[in-house]
Every structure is written in structure tokens, then in C-alpha cells.
Length: 407
Image (tube, rainbow, N blue to C red; front, side, top):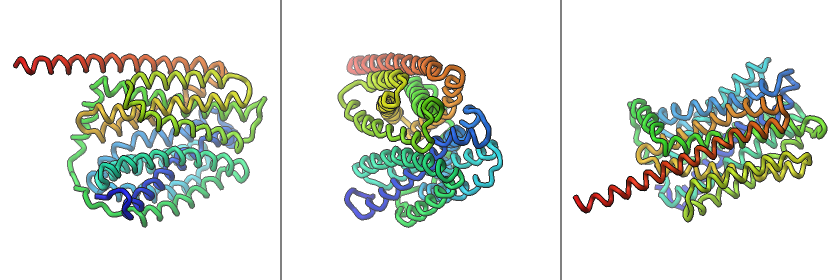
């Protein structure tokens, strides 16, 4: 097993962080470009949102198939196939002559990205010691956040000055370099055992998890929370580029630096869950995001930035607690449970964009406030239902303990 402070750990953890960074660079490259692409293809904001939604939706759909495939051919091989597909799919985008073709290429990108996202943590769980695993996962998640920020900034600045094609070419070349580095650095698997015939078992596990409200409610919280979080940023991009602000796309992409407050709150969530109720924390995180959305309604750019920082802090806090909840409460097939959480998470991000962008188109930020409150109300309701289910489960567990001595 790979232990902390060993050369193998340094190589493996760095390679996995690089891969994670690259995945999220590619996934969110187009988000700041959406206003620019709307002009490029003479499309509405809803139509052009497919450039983001197609990638996240196909990623969500392909997570479980990649995970099942890795049981047969191995985690490392799946991750490398995934990363080397990125520059290929990226260059294929250059041949797209319509918004539909480009959206389909973005769907292909999401499918390719899902391979690495689906099995990286499984590789760590099999190859690292428990102590090394906890540290490596922390670095992996931090690389997620950093990759998302850098990808968005690169997409915004490069496309604004040199066009979206240059942004795509740059990311494809960067992806090839990183894929080669990961191939060189990532150690071969020593503890992987191939398992065939896993499809039926995974299907049964998925059904089993969805039938448990204590798990499914947390998955839905993650999905609705992400639908709000990522798409409030998308709508804010359209708002800043439009009059009366008329901010260039490159500078509008700077709003994604507000994500860094979420990185801090995600780390704090671990400490919270050690001493307090996670569902209470989800409610608090949601409340912070709600306050941020209303602060962002103030018609000044500093207020908008403060609002986005609050939205990020609350959303990452809620997401971290919900994600950890699913991993903890799943008594069997934990990997399938966490993959299923991510399916809800990315599907929510995809579908939520069409909803909030429609609110923006028909009611400006006031429409976004109204539509956002509907979704936040759903999160509150799910949190309360989850809290009630947990109380019932605790009472039932206590009752069983009381009965056992008498028997």
C-alpha cells in the first residue's frame, strides 16, 4: 500500500490532483463564454446553455458505466483512457459548424471526463493506506475547485481576446501535456482485482439506495443545491455583460474567483460534522446562499461579488455535508452510493441552467430571485424531511438496543 511521505505517494497524489485539475478545466471552459457564444451563433441564452449543460449531463449519465467498466479493465487504465480522450474531443469541436454540433461535441467531452471522475477515488481507496487516502482525497477535491476556476478564467480571457477556437486549441494542447504527465507519474495498480458480471450487482445497489429516503433526500439536496449554485454564476455572467454594466467577457469571468470562499467553507464543513448535526449544517449553508442571492440583487458590482461569495460559501458547505452524509449512511455499496450522488449533482447542474436562465430572460434578476426561492424552498423541505427520517432511524435503533438485553 502507498503510505504518506513516500516517493510513490508524492507521485501518485500529484498525478491524481493533476488529472482532477484537468477534468474541471475542461468541464467549465465554456461557462464564461456563453454570452459570447450566444452572439457567435445568434442564439438565445437558453439555447447556448447547452454548451455547459450537455457536458455536465453526459458526465452524470456516464459515471456509473465507467465505474462498472473499471471493475473489469482496471482504474488506472480507465483514467488514462479518459484523459487521452480529452485533446481528441477538444480538437473535434473545431469542426463544429453549428450550435447543435458543438453541443454534441461538448456532450462527448462530458462522457470522456466521466471516466476519470468516476474511478479516481476508487483507485486511491485500493492503493493508498487509510491515512494517506484521507490526505490525498483532500488534495484531489482542492484540485477540483482550482481546475474549475482556472478553466473558467482561461475560457473567458482567451475567447474574449483571441476567439473561442483559440481557447479550445489551447485547452486541447494543455490536456495532452497533462495526460502524458499523469501517464508517466501514476504508479501501476498493485491491489486491483478484476470483477466481472458487476452490472446486475450495481443495478441492484442503485435501486436499493434510491429506496432509502435517508440517502435519496441527501442526493436530491446535492442536485438542487448545485443547480442553484453553478447557474446563479451563469446568470450573473449574462447580467454583467449586458447593459448597463457592459463588462467584457474576460473581466466578467473574474467572478469565478468568488469560488475560493467555497473552498474554505468546504474545509470547515468537516469540523462542523464532528460536533454538530449535518442536516442543521445543510440548512445553515442553504440560508447563507439565500442571503447571498438577495445581496446580489443590489445594483452595484461590489454587492454582486459579495453576494456570489456568500452563495459559494453556503453551497460548498451544503454540498460537502450532503456528499459526506451519503458516504456515511450507505451501509453497503458505498462507491455506488457516492457515484449516484454525483449523478444527481451534475444532472441538477445541467437542468437547473435552463430553469434559471428562463427566469432571467423573462424577469431579469427579480425573476431569478423568485425562481431561486422556489428551488431553495425545495432544499429546505428536503433538509427537514431528512432530519425527520434520521430522528426516526435513531429511535428505531435505540428501541432495538433496548429489546436485545431482554431477549
